[in-house]
Length: 361
Image (cartoon, rainbow, N blue to C red; front, side, top):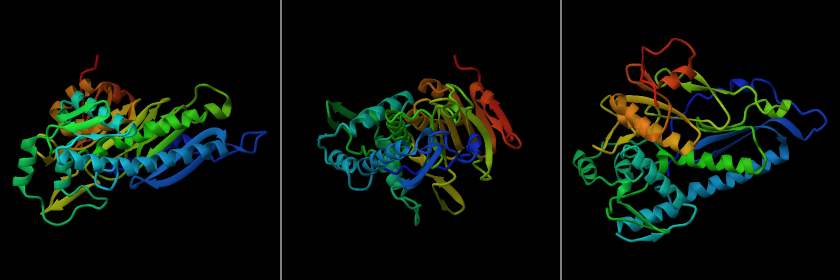
C-alpha cells in the first residue's frame, strides 16, 4: 500500500508556546513531540498534558502498529495484501486475518456510499499508470488500449465476496490498493491507542493528513474545554497556506490533490488520482479537503469528491455523509459546502471565485 498523499501545510497555530513542565511534576510535559518516518512519509505526534513516559510508550505502540500496517496493507510489497491480490488474480479464495479484514469491509462500504468513485479494487489501473512505486513514474505513458481494457472490465469492490474471513472475487482483475484511505484508517487506529493510554489531547499528523483529540490547553489548565486546534490547508497552486480552520475534539482533516504525485508527458500532468469510470487521471480538481470525525471516511471522501468533480461532488458528499468540504479547481475556483464556508478563514486573498452549495439537511 502506498500511503503517500499530498502534504497539507499544517500549522499548529495553537502550539506556539514552548514546551513547559507542569508545576510539581518534572516528568509531565505540557507538549510532547515525536516524529517517525513510516508509510513513506513523516508522521509527527503532538501530545499534551501527560507524563513523558506515558507519551513515549503510546507512540512506541503506535509505531509498532504502523509497521504492521506497512507490511500487511501494502499493495505491491510482500505482505498479506499482496498475497491476497495474487490469490484473486489466480481465481482463488484466501482466508485473511482480523488485521486486514476490517479494511476490506470498510473499503466496500465507502465504495458503495460513493457510487464507486472511491474504488480501492482498481489497483491494476494504478499500477498501469506507474503509481505502484515509492518513486514518481518515468518513461512512456501506458498503452491507452490497456487502460481502456482495464476500465471496461471495471474491477470494483462490488466484485469482492466476503464469507467470514474468506475473501474472493468474481473478477480476477480486482487488485486492492488502500492508498486512498489507508492513512485515515491508520490514524484512526493510532487515536484509539493514544486513548487507551489515557491521552486525551493530541494531534497525529501523517504527511499533512491529521487526526485530533481534545484541545491544546485543556490538560495543562485543568479545563475540559479550551481553544481548538488551528491548522492550515495548503494552497494547491502556489505552495503556501490558502486557509486555516479550527478543529474541535475528535475532528480530522484530510486533503487529496494532484500537485505532488503525478507524471508529466509533453507538458501534460497526469495525476495519481484515477477516475475508475474511464481509467484516466483526474484533471479538473487539484485538491479536496474534508473534515470528519472518522479519518478513514474523510480520506476516502476526499478522493471520491476529487473524482466526482465540480458538477457532482456535492451529491456524492451528501451520500457519504460529509458536511465540511472544500474543493479547488485548476482555475483557482473554490467549491464549498455552507458548513465549510463558515469555518475556513482564507489566510491571504480569497480564491479566484467562491461557489457555495446549498445547505445540507
